[in-house]
Image (tube, rainbow, N blue to C red):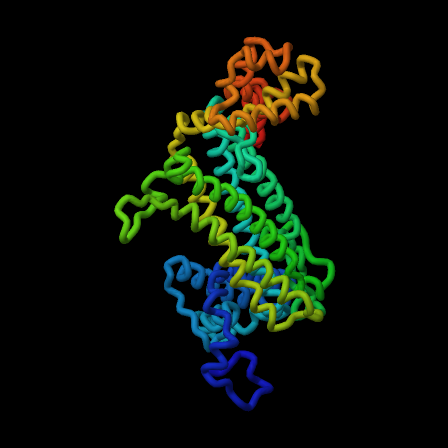
Length: 458
């Protein structure tokens, strides 16, 4: 098959070289965007008198026919036509004949592919924003169900202080809120049209770039033609934001995996999000959470890969840019699927409130409560800290806990300690009383939920 660009060539590529150089195996995913870009371009060509009205109508009809066939999955793409742009052009030629050749007037594959990627990411990021919003809703719902569910809070993976499980969930709500904001903000750089900047220098034809931008729903156009065809910052923005998002999902999955273990038994995932073992009949593995955690690595890899491709490219277009798409497609699919998995997995996750509560009763996460109690009685906090530290050591040596210490023993340590100390040592009191702004106190968690509900309505 003769290449559309073969005029100055006398030889032909071998098949294996064609295969190495072709991108159609993955950029077919932009077929819809490529046709939309061409429809806008041909409308502008006709409007500006660059092609006749009859030619415009023929090309438009051919593109519409291809669009309908694409919707019915009836288009066949070939490696010989290299990429989605030449494949569509050849298919258009088969539809309407030689007039199809006029479509490429005043544009290049360089601005064409950049336009396709802007359109693709604009649609993808909008969908991701929607999925993040859904997950944030799920987290708030789950948090509201568990305002008074007490669990151990951790630092260094050691019991630190008891907290509300609802409060813990809302920490991830906050992370996802920032993720959604970053995705939303990145749209301003995605929503820019490179169409009409041609190969690198613009064109001599009297085109109207603002018209094609308006047709495609872009809010602005690139001011510099070199930048327009060589910019991939908008993809790097997306990959970076996706990496942060996946990092947050991975952290949450790590906790879910731990919580669902035999040692914790804080939560139980439904069978939909679990698998068994081929040899151990008792196993119920949190595989979907593990996969989200694992897939985070491939998203990081896609970011690193494109940063590496871009780090030494001279202006303007280079064939290296063919490597900018697979990571973008892979990350898009990974992020969207992961968000869907997380939403349903958390929504259906069973919370073992009894085990969570009990985990705060046979530990020393109430030690800070006693130190605060002494400080409120006038003992300097550093002195109170030392007193409680020695008590904890003594309890560990004796195999007891702070709530087991008799009042008489407490009063030997300090005369300021009274019978009310036992209430202060309870996990529920410890959580309820932490009502500083943003704290884990029940009233503060309710305030966070109320604020989140308002945010989610916007």
